[in-house]
Length: 593
Image 1 (cartoon, rainbow, N blue to C red):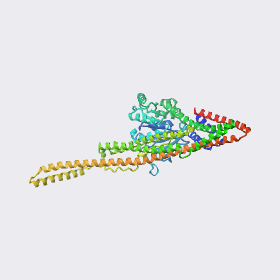
Image 2 (cartoon, rainbow, N blue to C red):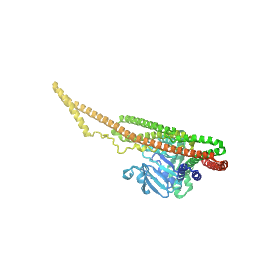
Image 3 (cartoon, helix red, strand yellow):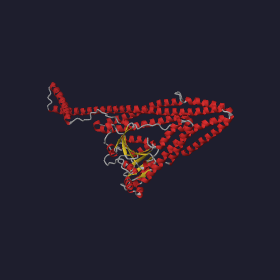
């Protein structure tokens, strides 16, 4: 908090400089930076397999029952726990809509099979606010769903949340060592988020937890090195109620809280303070250039004309940055066009792979037996592929922002942050999807009728042939009828299986087409939003550079017209202004360290 206070004081000083030097354009960005410092948000995602103690861990951390814990039913929607002046809760909808609810009703919406939103709208999450010291610094704990485990669509949703988080706490129980799927999830989470830690829960319930910790440490060291902390949520809750320091230390939460506050919280404060100091340093560069140009013209009247010419040339270059033909604008336009094509091609390729895998699975079984599992698998695979597609979009959009920023090397400290890309995994859920597959097998009565029809037809055919040649088949005709009936029944079953497979393939293609249609629209909208963000940011930056250069040019031009006495007097004032700018720069550099 001391670092935040220093950064806020620095921005306040810079805002006074903006007023004194007539720079309202720069004041806009500084005000935004100050607002970020005043209300920092630090998302910590709590992820892991279902029934591993994620909700209990969050409850133990904040010392209150805010996340629903149930032995039989798993969490179905994310729960966001953040600081508030008083306990309150709200339902979250897409995009950004909130609906207040009583805190006592949270359980109805969080658990699997819980109540839906108003008018049947899908609830995307539940937010709970409580007054707790650990949350006061902007910490937001996100209890992610665990329905279906890491192989379900919720795994992709958890990874999407991880990619937008500041840190991740991966929860695994002390009942067994890390599984292959858990290690795979951790490896991917580590590539998406800079800070990941593994928490082993339920140490009070399993006496061999130390052995499990040793095994997990080996797995992590071999595949994805990260901190590992064993804890007991039960002991922590008892320690909080009894205010027992020794019991709290035994629970293991002392190290976990220290990790959250010192490792994660400190990194967030450093990042915000660094961004604030970068904004101030950028202002200092512009002010320094203005006064240095004026000083050069005042100190050497003969060089004033040269300074004015140089600044005029700079003015033309800066003004060209505002035009549609500017190189940065062309880079942005071409980059978004190329990225749109690449993202669309990547999505189509991924969908083709999913369809091919589904076709193979359908050919190996009967949809009447496997469709329920196939449906869940299909949604999970599509959610995972959508997430991978959006990771490509996000990374490429970030690279595009950096390339555009290269054209503003004069303002390298003001390059835009990573563009915002939302969670794509809900797009894998198609409302009211009808597979239109007749999954009902033939009943015994229908099988009997098919067999009888085939037997009767076959026997009748041979009896007629026999009568034509003057041969009476007698009992042989009955045997022939039975063989023909069995064959007819087998062929009918085969025909129905083939029909179900064809219907299943068509259903899968319809589903994939629907998801591709929605995801394609969403990705194009996202890219257009990224393009507008980058365009507006760098257009504003060009305006700032133009303003700074215009002020420098006007000051240099006025300096050339001054008398010797006026120049000497003004020179002292300019030196004083440069000293003030230098002091502001030094304070900004101190905050950035």
